[in-house]
Image 1: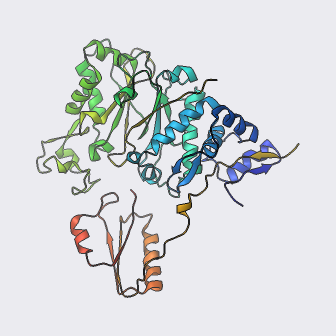
Image 2: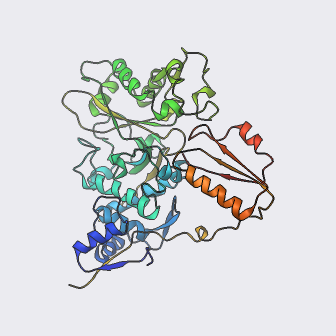
Amino acid sequence: MDPTKSIQVDSLEEAHEEMYRLGWTDGLPVIPPTAKLVSAALDFLGRDPQEVIGEIPPKNRIATVEKVVVNSVMAGCLPEYIPVVIASIEAMLHNEFNLNGIQATTNCISPLAIVSGPVVEQLGFNAGDNVFGGGSRANAAVGRAIRLVMWNIGGGYAGEIDRATFGHPGKYTFCVAENSQDSPWGPLHQDLGLPAESSAVTVFACESPHHIATGSGYVLTGGDILAVIADSIATAGSAAMNGGGQVLLLMGPMTAQKLASDGYDKQQIREELHQLARKPVRLMKSNKFLNPEHPFHWANFIDPEDDDAMIPALRTPEDLLIMVAGGWGSGSGFNAVCHGWMQAGGLAQTRPIELIPS
Amino acid sequence: MPPIELFSPIGEEAPHAKGISPFPELGGSKIAFLFNGHVSVIPFWRNLEEEIKTRCEPADTITVIKPNTFAPAGPSTIQDLSDVDLALVGVCA
């Protein structure tokens, strides 16, 4: 049987079990991609179904518009979400992203889609409470569609080519939106080169979010806040401490507004965290995750014989991606950090989103 | 109830992914196997080496295992392999 061709089933109940049997899902149930749903989405997009978006590694199978639509339907996407999915895939196919490596690595990273700009409100993405959790169809379905494309078109099957030692729940769905409404600064996509007023998606392959509590924004100084955040970034076992690369800081709106009121902009935060987020050679030399000859190793620029020398988690200030997301919490400044995949890949890529009028 | 058609989400293979380029003639040559020594791949590389020896009858083989799962081979290792005719290199981390 040609696995790329459509199948026929006698009932919806049979459809669900057959999709599991064929390996069309990584474990969670999916929406049966019926002709009606797929055709409606293709009609909405108005693009040639056989238009090639790209080849998805590691199996380098062809992602046509139709195949992306099928996976998006299975994920529960409304047709209007699919331009976001397509833009995310295009971003992931950038060479610097190294999707092939991301699909195969023993590391636990997964592509995170960060939606920003007017599209957040227009399509109902969640940028507030539970931004990484449930409750938003747009967040859940877009993130899921991206994963199903990686699974079904890319062939990144867990336990086969995907050798992630742990993985993380973001390998089922991993999509958030930026909270521009409560942010005192410009959006993430502006930092990465797009006009501020654009709608965009940024993909960044990263670990699961690690919560950072910085006390009450009304009590702490900006310096106190950044000292806590710095220590949470510079953990001895983190990818950044061992091999550099990007780190994503999601600042809750309370923390962001407190820092802004103390006079900080994003670049000042990056520069201060670059200085603060460090660990001594004395600690790091005992972690032999990378050989000192490895091009990512900190021994390339820090004397490994100087126990008191401080190794930066952020090799440059620009390695820190900053966005505002999440809710206001209960009076505490909650934030989150997501470490990337050293310098091996998954580096943030941004694409504009062209919405189709409904 | 009429049958329900489900579109397949599986992509077609790219044309250039089909077909395997033949190995060059390896009889009498020196072949190196260079990989990361990860526990999950050792059986594969062991079997590959045995298969190459049986089918291709190289003059000599050398296996180089890198000291950790992620580092590329160092310059001294590459220098040690400078006289091999073919190196089979494992990639991924």
